[in-house]
Length: 531
Image 1 (cartoon, helix red, strand yellow):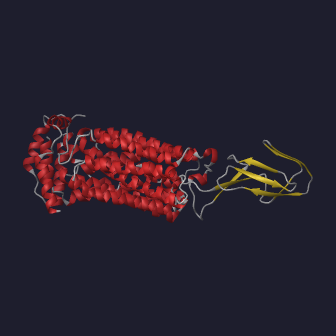
Image 2 (cartoon, rainbow, N blue to C red):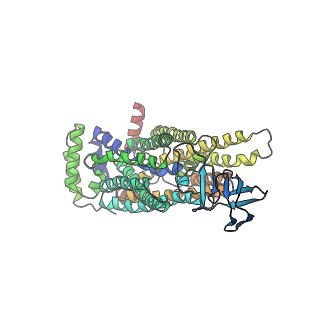
Image 3 (cartoon, helix red, strand yellow):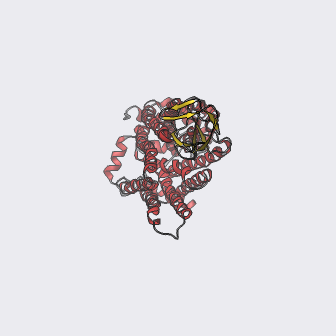
């Protein structure tokens, strides 16, 4: 069956205009995916803050007898106005009040009706931190919102992966494309922190289904010699979206406006119901012959190719007997690095984009494992060095603090470049490991564990706040270093046909991991000569 599927795809264009058009539509699904995955870099942005107790006015207050609030007591003052000088410094969780008689009192600021928080923001800037005063004892709630979102991502990845393999790629893709429009609008008008995180959980739940299904549908459009380029191009869309978000956030400033700006454009995809077909591979594996014939006829008509009657006849005959068997820590921290938050985020996105474009060429010239290991090592070693620099800096008086910050930021950017390269390759590599019958659930299972990293990442950054920023960077680097060695245990998929059944995978495993399919290797060589 696998040979006939590959043979059929080769008769439908290599690739034709139909496949390219559908691929570009699916690639556009990465805009809402990436926007939602990384937008907490701005939604959870913290700003310098100070507090003012409402029992005190700006400069004066009037005391009649005894004024008290909690443990604070100030007695023995007549009805005259009493001058108060306030010492409310930024990034402190208390204010000190100096009275006319020379006494003073410090009051801890606890969120509530008796405290007003002031944030050092530019006109129009806001985040959930400034909206709901997520500072001091409530500071952890900002990173908790990111963790809750990625919990939704994990659950959605597993469920929609199963549904896409059982009921088809297209209905799951459409459901997870349109549902986030409603939840996204709800997030923009959320009246409370609780409502925000509940809706963000649902957003993550749907968005992961969209990401995985769109990627699988894209991979199933192409023959092996174009699959690598298609996967790398999808990641270029990822990098472009990161850069776009930086521009949107700089332009709009207010987190609610940003949310609407990344949500409403998805309304333009209403035509996907008619324009994007079901995966041809999935239809064949499910033995839906009539739908296969209709789709093949449509593809050949658009690509101006003859209808492959002989191949279709063989597939129809086989169908009578065949049985089908069933990269966020560093990115989230970019706005917290030294320098302008928007510039850092823009540079970060540009670094992603360079890595993704580079992978487009790498997948045409090299195998899968070696580039992944190299990218892992670049990311791991750079993060470890970035974390170690503050310890090396201690005692070196000729190093300014500004130099230290620039070095840490620079190595962190290089580390992100390496891990972005891994991110670009790993989706392609994973999709080539799984057969069609379980590809979506397999990819979703991988996404589950990847999103576990998304759940843990904000807490790793919080650990850095509690201890040292170096802790977060070195921990990320150590994990990447371990992963680089584990990658060597995986089989090579370069030049092999995309497996359709579990039996196909078992046959490849039985032959060993020495070479890819000879015909496909020849096709790669010919394509490289042309390029």
